[in-house]
Amino acid sequence: MQALRVTQLSPDLSGVALADLPTPTRAPGEVLVRVRAASLNFPDLLMTRGEYQFKPQVPFTSGLEFAGEVLEADLGSGFAPGDRVMGGNKTGAFAEHASVPADRLSAMPVGLDFSAAAAMGAAYSTAFTGLVELGGLQEGDWVLVHGASGGVGLAACDLARALGARVIATTGSPAKAERIAALSRPEAVLTAEGRFREQVAELTGGALADIVFDPVGGDVFDESTRCVAFGGKLVVVGFTSGRIAEVSTNIPLIKGFSIVGLRAGEHARRFPERGAAIQRAIARLAEAGAISPAIDRLLPLARWREGFAAMARRELVGKVVFEPGA
Image (cartoon, rainbow, N blue to C red; front, side, top):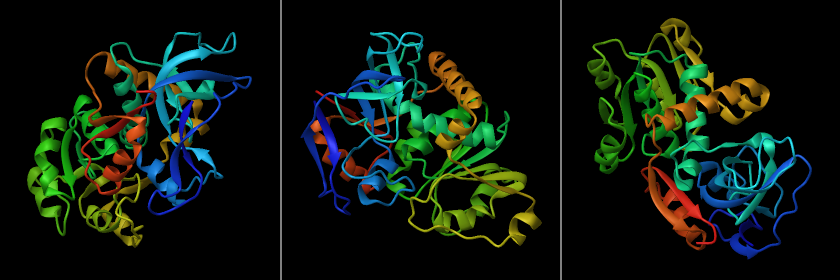
């Protein structure tokens, strides 16, 4: 089978290439899946550089998540050959076949195709865990979503709107604002540069944001501490800006807000019942047509470099999805 292998960590993808590998042998407790679609996430790019908190030993097959068809599974696993599934592991998705523990998979929501299912998993799990599970999202809340052109940011906008929140989206690229507005239909799209608190205050009638969802960090985080309502939540999702921000503890004390760290995958592993409930909630929304992932481009796996490069250049509005074997 073809698989995208990282044989050497490098800043320029020089240690990444397609390779021919044997189909993985399924271990007890695992499910062997024919991968139909696999989506690119920012951690996939970071892992090729050794810059993500999880550092797999090289060589490894890249890719966090996929959707496909079950080929082999244990009796009693809840899966059978032919089942359409989504999920994945920390690595291994960018290949024609993958073998992963059964508890890392779930049934695809009815009505979704493979590309949508592959694009939905990690992004919407992250958004739901951050906004609902940790952020306590309520209907009518104001939600400020940074990095709204990325897969996770767009998922947060989509999910928040589906749950009755009022969304303000931000982007570092004014050229992306129109596309973000068309895809996620927020109350407004702002350029997250310099001081944007006054714009947030004006849009919310002075109430500010009940939840700030921040995958960007750096200067955006700094200004976000001025945008959180009293009793609100500032959810730390990541640091795509490249700078890990710091905050003086008197700021959340005086302003009465909480800073919450989000690791959706770890949350699901530590609290598996809650993780399963989150997946069921997302599936219900997807099957009802209330949420739908945004896909920037669909590529055969042979064109993997195009997708990684577009992510590195921050060109994307939505997810890159690869089709192994296409």
